[in-house]
Amino acid sequence: MDKYFKPLPISTQETREFWEGCKNHELKVQKCLKCEVTRFPPLPMCPKCNSTDTKWIPVSGKGKVYSWIIVHHPIIDSFREDVPMVIALVDLEGGGRIVTNLIECDPVNIKVNMEVIVEFVDVTEEHTLPKFKPISNLL
Image (cartoon, rainbow, N blue to C red; front, side, top):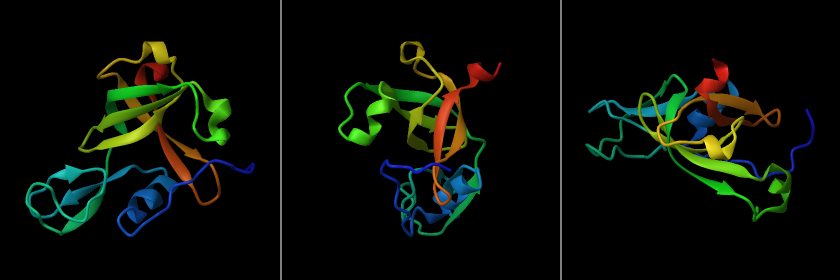
């Protein structure tokens, strides 16, 4: 694996399960054990019932684009070769909304509710990033 010179996520107590799932190419979200609401990003307390009883569950990796921006001028030099870069909010099938990159698509073809699926990118031996690509690319 080549050297990776971009910023990497920092795993915290609240995100450790998520990043471990990504490393295993499995997308996970939190589920409240009291009211059964699923959520992402992770929170220490359920926003619906205020319970702190949570478990992590795998989800399909499918979702729909909620919103996006196209970055043409990176604020960090290490992303210079990646522009234009699409940063999107994706509503996950199974619950939650994730901030991610859209890959393998022309930015002019992105639409609200476009169906996407996760693609895990192993960037270092310790870090795997979930990115999303259009499901139509697979057909």
